[in-house]
Amino acid sequence: MEQKTPFLRGRGAQINPVSKYENIVRDEQVVDWALAAADWEEPDLKTEYLETHPKTILNRVESPDIPLEWSMNPYQGCEHGCIYCYARNTHPYWGYSAGLDFEQKILVKRNAAELLEKELQKKSWRAAPVMFAGNTDVYQPAERRFGITRACLEVFWKYRHPVGIITKNSLVLRDIELLSQLAAENLVSVAISVTTLDETLRQFLEPRTASVQQRLKTIETLTAQGIPVFAMLAPIIPGLNEHEIFALAKAVAERGALGIGYTMVRLNGDVGHIFEDWLRKTMPDRADKVLNKIRQAHGGELHDHRPGRRMRGEGKIAEIIRDQFRLAREKYFAGRQMPKYNLDLHEQHKSPQLRLF
Image 1 (cartoon, rainbow, N blue to C red):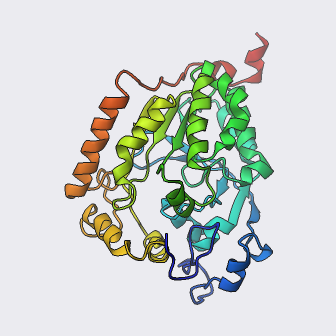
Image 2 (tube, rainbow, N blue to C red):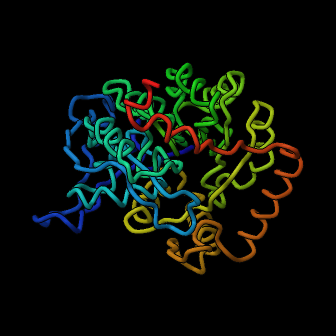
Image 3 (cartoon, helix red, strand yellow):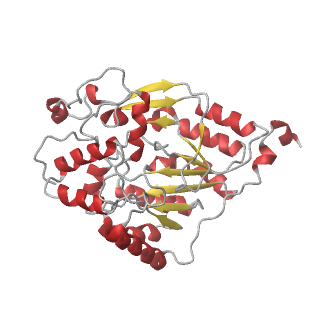
């Protein structure tokens, strides 16, 4: 990909839009390109980990587009740096930018496992699948250092509670024995996001995620251990990866995925500005075409807040994508389905006293 402007390698966002929640108004931060060109792992560009002390860890899911009741995030921000990530818009609530800050300033919830255990022990708690992600990737590089995701999975296993994991990182294989235990009781599913089979595009689109081949191998390895895998072919970005739907579906099916899903890219809040800046720097010759196609799929806008439509889009482009996805599912996933979560075991393991009998 020809770049006509300096590009910060190893990061997705190239700018730091001002957070509307900051007390001090500043000009939009500009990257030090001399430093960036030298080495993106220079000290000034390394990730900063900031410890937080939340009082609760489980979040009720209010979105009508997500068929789960609860989610939890052991981290806020994400080093993966996916340029399109909707979760970028949560970082300004903490006083940081949705741009580079989202990738470089990672909030760490060290007490996540302790808080989770307290919730699962409550007499009032009734088992319901927890989406282990939502505003972060639970296996992002920070997890190698802090191990919070692992600690939380041990709590889910201790209380035999169902959990669904979403990740782009092959680090999930570190916990394969624990996941196998959970899977044996129908207590876990793993969704692996595979956005493209083009490794060059992946490196620009999702700079610190696992490679395409690593993700496919991860699906294959998890499946071989009896862990149900769902592949998220998401997001579909018109003009960049919508032509890959059949190839993506075939690739994940061959590795053993039991189902596929997709979402249409939507560039809400600061993400639209960040994405457009990135696109004009990485693919200046295609930028207008891609942006116009995204607008066509969202009623003339880059963003979309409408429940029921925001995840799928509308118009001719969205219809073509929807039809391709339906045909790909029929062709490669006939007869396959994800197992249902076991919601019955948790009550037996809620109280330590019950384990004595």
